[in-house]
Amino acid sequence: MIQGMEVSNDEKRQFVREGFVIRRGFVSQALTEPAKRLVEQWYRNSYDASNIEKYTQKTFAPDLGSHPDLLNVYRSSGLAEATASLVSPDHIQAVSTVQVQIRVPDSALSKAQPEKTMHVDGVSCPHLDPRELRTFTLIAGVLLSDVKDANGGALRFVPGGHVDMAEWFRNEWALGASDQVPDRVSRKPSVPFVGKTGDLIIMHHLVPHAVGSNSSGTPRIMLYFRVKHVEHEKLVLDALRDPWVEYPELRKLALQTQN
Ligand SMILES: O=C(O)CCC(=O)C(=O)O
Image (cartoon, rainbow, N blue to C red; front, side, top):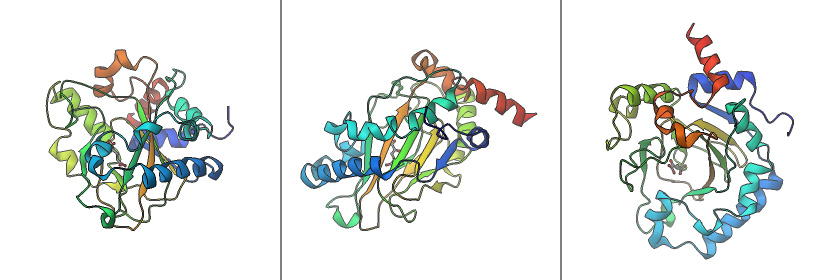
């Protein structure tokens, strides 16, 4: 276990209330540099602008999805331990793939890069059958470039939105529905994840998020690791309706906060 990498009790309480934890400078330069070099090399030599919709929906650099230099950002930084500590004493599945998301600078685009409106991952994806769920337990995003402001292609998320989403899934949603979030959630203010290379955000899978264009002159590069509870496949529908079914310790904190 890497010392100091587990999520602290204060951070766990924040995760319960707001659905996210941010750690500045979590991933060391020794790990971000080889990862960034690899992605930038791909962007220079292999990026095909005609595939921008596909890259944006799925992943940029699809051939690097299991590259050790990218997986090391999760495996060797303490991030695996941090994510496991949120689900403890239950366990998580091993992570074997990474999603690379680039927001290409507006100035380098010949056609617009699709924006992503508020959504939670894996539910009613515009490119999938709405009955198909591809959910997980939490997502960890690591910046491989600096993002100075919201217009630099920053991920935007709704703090506390996991509670609203679970309520919606319980009371209004049905499998096959095409709405990604209810209107009341898409109208809520969102917060941009701005920061520096190596900064980390961990979000509950029910936190709604979105992303838009990048008016800065440099590509915004982020790695995303999707982490599943060991029993996730059995808990898919329950985990949409009950935010803490995969987080036994956090359920206790959630109950304490309510009382
Ligand atoms: O590019 C981003 O940061 C957002 C990615 C995202 O929301 C997604 O892939 O579902």
